[in-house]
Length: 334
Image 1 (cartoon, rainbow, N blue to C red):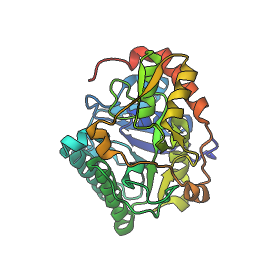
Image 2: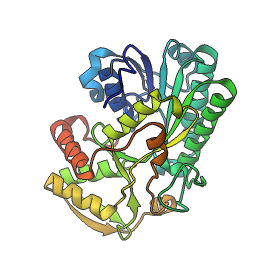
Image 3: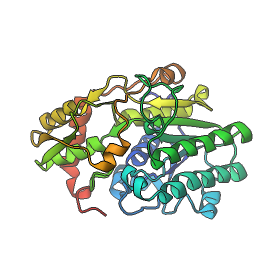
């Protein structure tokens, strides 16, 4: 990606930086010349994995702490030009049975980060990565940023609340913020031990293990699946764009794929696995919003970003990564 040297010499803090999106972002930032500090609580069952930053481990600072720790965040935000806030509770199924981790991590944690910035580094720019789930069921397709928000779960509600908190700090306290709503992301460095989040990556694991991929319902529900490198490019470009400050921006793909096509493409790329239909579990059915794909016209106009990786190409790179590094990602549910 061509960032015009915008991160060269900049200081960047990445919360959740040992996870899936965070580690790929940290690698992108280091390669762009930034001085990167990673914050991660390494909560069991999440994507935090030190192997994720193997390519840059000698060039980053890692702080093992929690975004809910006000004393730690008050110290860590100081002196940074950019704060990429990616730490969060991301288990949709857990949020149905226990709402408090979402409330505590996603809402309280975000408030702690924003207060730390207000008090100790108000000139920093904050980039937040929320979820397309904040919209809930689509009223019309593709879904643009003006669509109503009717989330179906506590996870999505907590992300929307965090976004609103950040918007208040942008408007009332002058802390420049960019608010991103990311779609279904897949690719290297994701959590691969259990299926509670990241459906495309979980399908990849099943295919590599030559197991059956369960496609729920009739398999024709539409989603936009975004390769992680494209997502990282969108995050970094949005951080540098003055026109993105204070804006909500979709980060997705305007060419949707159904789950049958996803499963068949993964099996074809992997050369193993099989798929079959399965009924929705009650938990998944309760949170299923139906067809969804993003209108990405706004981020195209304001930032100049568009996805570049075709689904088959992204899946091929994903399969190659996990085939080479399986020992670092397979295992029992933590």
